[in-house]
Amino acid sequence: MPDDQTGDGVNDSLLDSLYEAVLAGNADIAVDSTRTGLGAGAEPLTLLFDAMIPALEEVGRLFESGEIFLPEMLVSARAMQASMALIRPFLADAASARVGVFVMGTVAGDIHDIGKNLCNVMLEGAGFEVIDLGVNVPAADFVSAIIEHHPDAVGISAFLTTTMPEVAGTIAAIDDAGVRGETKILVGGAPVNQEYADRIGADGYAPNAVSAVRTVKTLLGI
Amino acid sequence: MATQSGVTMTISSRDRVLMAIDHEAPDRVPILLGVSNATGIKMTPYRALKELLGIDAPDDYLYDWPELGTAAIDEKTMRRLHSDVRGVLDLEPARVLDRNRDRPPHDDYIDSWGSGASEIKPGQWFPMVHPLAGATTIDEIEAHGWPDMEDPTRVAHVADQARTLAGENRYAIVATPWLLFPLERAFAMQGMDTFLMNMALYPEFAEALLWKLQDVCKQLMGYFLDALGPNVDIIKIGDDLGTQQSLLMSPDMYRRVLKPIHADWIEFIKDRTDAKLMFHTDGDVFPLIDDFVEMGIDILNPIQTSAGKMSDLEALRDRYGSKIVFCGAIDTQRILPLGTPAEIRAEVGRVIDILGPGGGYMLSSVHTVMDDVPAENILAMVDAVEEHGRGASR
Picture: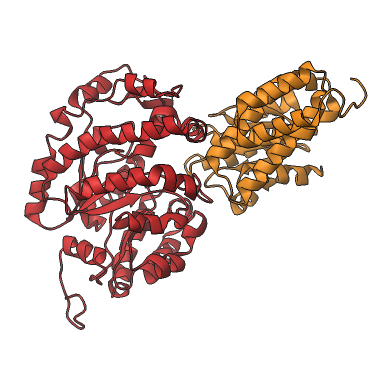
């Protein structure tokens, strides 16, 4: 890992173009800018921290303030993911770029994942390594993932009132297995709220992807 | 008539509904249950209800569609629920129903549009089959095998059923052809996240797909309305436009892309029937209610009180109470599944006190009564209307 070379090999207009592409949700331009930057010897962390992450933060701000809605946020997340696919190989040994490990999943019996996937992108943009277990995830798989990955935080999502009890069941399974340790558990999804989160012993609740990042950072003291 | 004080009136369920829609105070707040998926009860709580009530009736499904999981409620139970409405539905073509009935167990359910559901655990089906998931061009829209709306088995039963109900003149008739909604259909064809992204990435394609879907919907709606003739009081359509916290898309995108399509859809229906138009949309849609009124929507359903500003029933009543009829408002995310019967009675009383006076409100659950709702809670809800809704609607 070379010393910090912020600014080397990449000019402001390229960073601007990458920033704008993520903000506007243009995956083609985001990928082109990322490729061009990397080809010109840009430091991957520069692209990430000086363009992609600020763009994603702006997307989050616009979403929370009601200036953009799901379609725009989804395309920004898609552009971010496309660029991240190019950046990610360089991050493998860049421990400095990682603030924590986050295991995420939608509970057993539920296949809703739009909110969960947005959380994943926002969390990755905030520096987390996200391990996505997908949808319809049995409690035992959450337990196994905690044993395997030692995450700093676990996100459990449910969209239906009928699958919401699985959130409590998953937390109970994690506790019963004795693997919770210092891992923080966040819960979310349409019917879930703070009161429910408190009742089932979650550490945090987030109503949307932007708030999920804020909540987990607070919980971890980042 | 209902305002004659001191006189015990007996009015029919149908009159009760029609008065509420006309913003006149009926003898009690009308109850709309069991006539469509969004006013329906899932099979598990329906079975529990029948057991609790000692009613012997078959486990039939709405739309003859077990994978949807919503019960076709028998007449005895409908009466015990004090439901003031009876439903008329369409059907998928007989050959599609047969094909699905005869398919190997646990295989995907596929409808006549090519979209469908997968079983993720026994008896739990989710809409996961999206035949146009990868489409982004007009050519792909044209090339899709669109459903045959000429098939007479879709509506063969409709005329007789509606005529019989109208002849009895007892209950208001609510007609709900399955998912003849352009946005929901687009979600079914592409997946919700994919289509929402395409609205941003490929707006011409997205708009063309919505109009194409609406054209196909119109073919069936035309036949359906022909079969109903004058024997219908409420036509129910809709499109989910809200989320738990706000709108699914910006008001600007709604007004630019979808509103003209909805306006055209409503005009098409109103040109062909005198029935009142009920529009179903989940989530917080408060910022769009003026648009709904402008387009001629008569009744808004389901008033998801757990979503954003829809919780502010006083504001809804004060701003829109004279312009639109509210239907729904009994929470299914917390109150019905988790509340005690006493809490449910209190919530029904609260909602009726706000929305009930002077008519303009019809009580229903906010969307389907799901598997987690105890039968006792369903009865607590409807009995509370009988107890509380009589005086309060005056």
